[in-house]
Image (cartoon, rainbow, N blue to C red; front, side):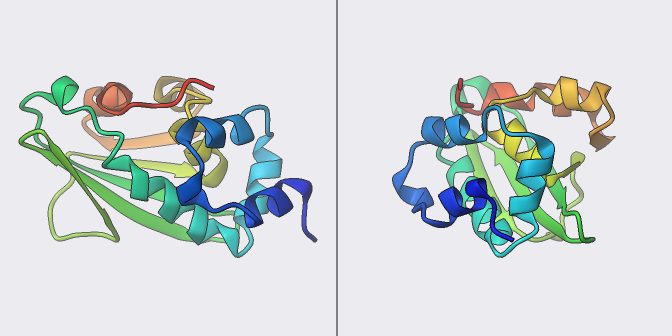
Length: 155
């Protein structure tokens, strides 16, 4: 069954809307609403669109000399798992789909709703971690400060 949110998102060209507009769409949506959308065919399209912009939203001046491979695991309601990696080094952030050969400095695992709320600026990684909706393996300090390295929308 298609929800109003799913209908709204299905018609979007994600490359044509700003991160701030996307943050506004996510704002105020319940985890259940987001979860329903992310169970359907839109899931891969939405996750890919978010990560496609991640490199552009990187703030090299904030990262300085940071070198870190970050693995993102987004889990879906039906046992789905999508993995992306962001490799930050020398003032550049490279984004790739899938699990690479490198050893991540930190791995963040979260559900679909938490992922969208985090990347749209509608929640913080610390809030998600403290409420146990974000699992961190590896460097917890790096994970807690990742938001400062990216231009996250302010919904």
